[in-house]
Image (cartoon, rainbow, N blue to C red; front, side):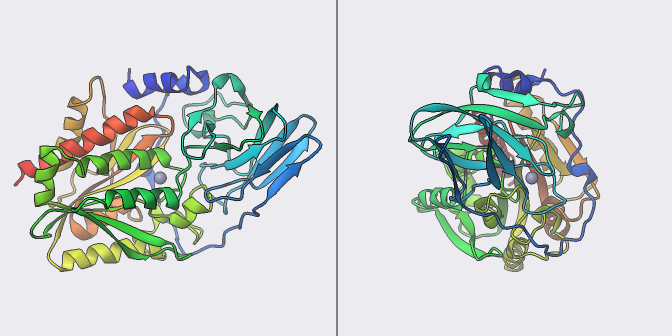
Length: 420
Ligand SMILES: [Zn+2]
């Protein structure tokens, strides 16, 4: 039995809909096809506060990261309509809104999606910072498929019951993490003398592509590159990256030694427009950025490409690249085993040492060959780096996300120093 699946049930207060064991692993990156990544138009979200005065319910999408495309009162239920920025698009139906009433009352809210089924178990917050999953007693699914774990087993719709009053209640698919949150985290890290940040470009809509540098090395000749959030709703990937980076920046002897040898660059928010606009998956250029790493039609991927090219032109060598994402389950998408890198065998050693340093944990890893448009293949193809996509389950318990991120960073530091 895999630990992550057992803990899912605990985190969600024994919510049966999330505690099921997958019958078949969902296929992801292994089968990525090359697609044309030329820019495509996106549908702008109409931002408003919808007032249902007869029912005394108010609902708003007027904040960064919001997604609420329409609302309608039907008998005693508030129907919320959630649509993607464009289509086709993969089933990552992000939602986030604020809701309140004049007098204390309970409200039923039904989610209706275009091009998707319900995916993210609702999270609630009273301040937009601290989040808790909805009590599963207040959650009901409709038309749930009987198929395997993955998109086919998701419900067409759900109805949730909320307790409202005049204080704003935030409802979102995952903990809300916009550019504001991530840049604030960068500012707090940058208090350390060995951490600095710089903007390496701009997104399509002019938001900064911000890069963090972690180093106490005399020469910047050995580089590790950490990045994430190409796909805005993949918040658990961001939480894992945060734990990973905070381990590299920590006070341990290992981290201090590592920083004297290796320079780490982190671009924690690859898609700041998408995150702030409440996108399901795409950039403001209307595409999946993690298909653009061979065509480079987009300023976000070009910023990283040019940054790393400049570093390597100055004589640095890229040893390791890690791209954080979220999906149905915890998976490591690696290179195939025949790829010859700057540090042969590092990935396999790293994965097995993560496994042996987390009790009862079994690594789920998949290699892939033909995925030219994805980031890890670019890092290998152009720089010879060991690289991977680190996928964290949508419902992986947050303490376990943290633990895995910490252990992954510790083992990487140890193994890279062992190769000195
Ligand atoms: Zn992703």
